[in-house]
Length: 54
Image (tube, rainbow, N blue to C red; front, side):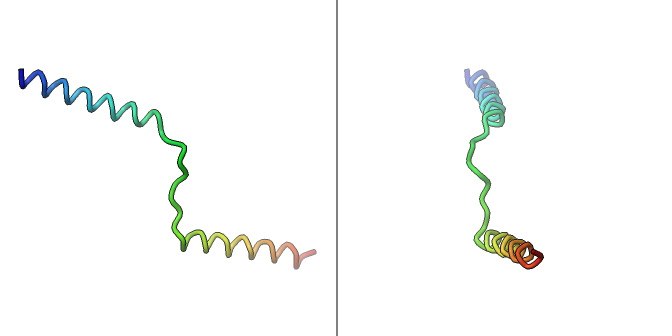
């Protein structure tokens, strides 16, 4: 009984992990505070450069 239970448990876990990979969540990836600040600074520089070129 224990051997059969262990085999079934292993197979269920494999199936569960495979199913989880197929159904990824829609949550966006985490972006650190420093990375957000860097991206915001880059965007601000681009806006300033487009305004200055006009």
